[in-house]
Length: 209
Image (cartoon, rainbow, N blue to C red; front, top):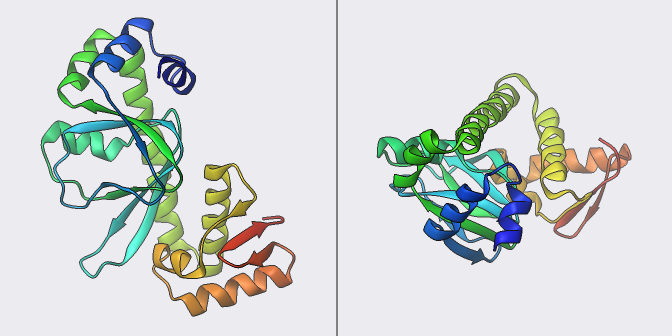
């Protein structure tokens, strides 16, 4: 585990890495495993060692909107805030691929903030980067048309997975963009006709966006 931890979080001091290994719960998860549910009380912080996690928000009717992805070397800022304030989570999280994580008890977070400079800087940067991503999501929902939102969604997925082929169904995209499968399929077909993507069964190959 040490090699993966050092690789994902290279700026952590050796003493901090040792404490993380001592206090953390190491988990390997299959794709589509639920890590966090809306309304759940959070008692641990997730550190992503390998894989990809999707963080999303749902309304009372089950409609879902993607907020951001978590990649190796990252953590969920919203879960940190909820855990520190002993509040129920307003978001959900699920694995996208096979994922390796460390669950860190929330009690250690405050202690490490004053004890380790690298942890303090990591937490602050986590808050900042997640805030920037939330602003991007808000801008897309509020100010962009559905075809622009779809293109942004695909770019984001391409960056998160580091692959030009995204394994996902039209219905899944529709759910995450709070649209219908028919609308998404029609827009994807137009993108294919323009040479931007190539459509396959439950997969989309990005040519140029």
